Amino acid sequence: MPRIILKSGYIKKGGDASKYLKYIATRDGVQISNDSFGDKVATEKQRKLIESLLKDYPESKNLLEFQDYVKHPTRKHASTLIECIFDEHLNELIARGGYLEYIANRPRAERLGAHGLFSDQAGSIDLSAVAEEIEHHQGNVWTHIISLKRGDAERLGYNHATQWATLIRSHRNKVTEIMNIHPGNLKWYGAFHDEGHHPHVHLVVYSSDPKEGYLKKEGIDILRSTLAKDIFKYELVNLYKEQTHTREQIKKETQKQINTTLESMQNTLYYDQELHQQLYELRQVLDQTSGKIQYGYLKKEVKEKVDAIINRISEFPEIDQLYMVWKELRGSIHQTYTDKYQEVLPLHRQKEFHSLKNTLLKELLAVDFNLKKIELEHVSTFLNVETTIQEVSDNDVTLEEIKPESKRLRDLKSTFKIKTQTNPNVISQFEESEQMDGALLITRLLHHTSRTLDQNIQQKLNSQYLQVESKLRLKIKLKKHALGQQCHDPS
Image 1 (cartoon, rainbow, N blue to C red):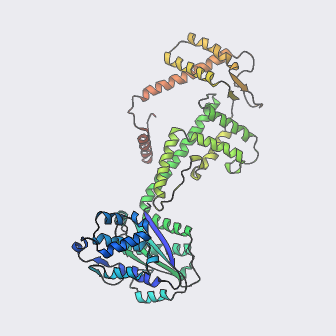
Image 2 (cartoon, rainbow, N blue to C red; image 1 turned 120 degrees about the horizontal axis):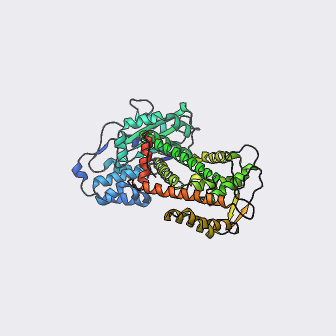
Image 3 (cartoon, helix red, strand yellow; image 1 turned 90 degrees about the horizontal axis):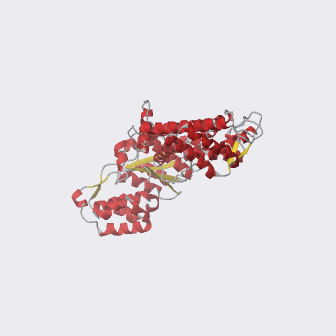
């Protein structure tokens, strides 16, 4: 359920708009004069009226006031539930004389003082004059009900009419905009009802020009969002800051992974064969592309290649965890003013991260590839070679023991199919002659072995540190970064 609820409707010309106004104006002071009397069992008249209302409006069973009534069917809870249902469906029920009669004559009820209307200007309002004006109005009259949860209303100060009046007055121009009413013609009145689990305010809005005014569904959403951003502004500021910080972290980490991957390709270190293949193919297409190379100007099939690469990089653990945090923050903001389903998109489809695609293109074009396109025909043999390298690092073998493996590498031409792309600027990655340079192969084998040994040593060093669960470690990193501290986490 959203933290703010807004329900809108309208009463046509010749309807009961004046009755609506009188009800919201005078209901504000209704109280049960004897609490002990309110704790008695609900009357038969109350029970029948509740049954009738629930039959017409079954969704009212979701109200917290209904749950209170079910647990404790007292006169006080029954009265609160009836009034809550009536408030939510006031446009339809206002003409039911039986209900108004109940409000006026329910057990031990009394009305306190004058009405509770407020409007543009502070001061007293002549209820009779306003009701008569609305009764003779030749156009539509719109009604809005805006409610908060009890806890939020108490904590943020929206448990009295003064705060609500200030809020509505400050957004008067927004009301005229979404309702298509000239500011000079706007007429509105409000009344606060401090009732049950959802304190709320009723608004009556119309134009002095009967031909003016209409309200679209999109306008209701805009008004709800506008009021929510004002009511919860201090809480939302913190959420927005955290979300922005996380977004920037995602962009930095993504660029880091792009640069690392491209660097490994330049050094002919194929740690992610699929990603390297995608990058190489994209680069070949870009080299043949004329004009300005930006994502928005690319052909559909080229855009799909870019999207596929960004999607693959977003699966890296560091980026994936950051993106999960960003989505949680975004969901918290979204749920402030609506309960509508928000589609969860992958990172490469989120508009907030569109710039990453141009970052990829920029970094890719800046690299001078010294490589050829390699297609593996026998993946099993490739895995065997990797296993051999790992075994070398694990068993601390000598150079004499490595030499026999060089023969296996010389025979790779029977296992791998090497396709040379015609390009005068490309330096051959492997010799095209029948016999491959054994010294070069041994050097590369030793290079891979040294990197593997280095990784093993680093893992042993890392094991000396206190191990922290990944999600907690991520939150610690973000917190340290927010405080301007350096993070020396070995991970």
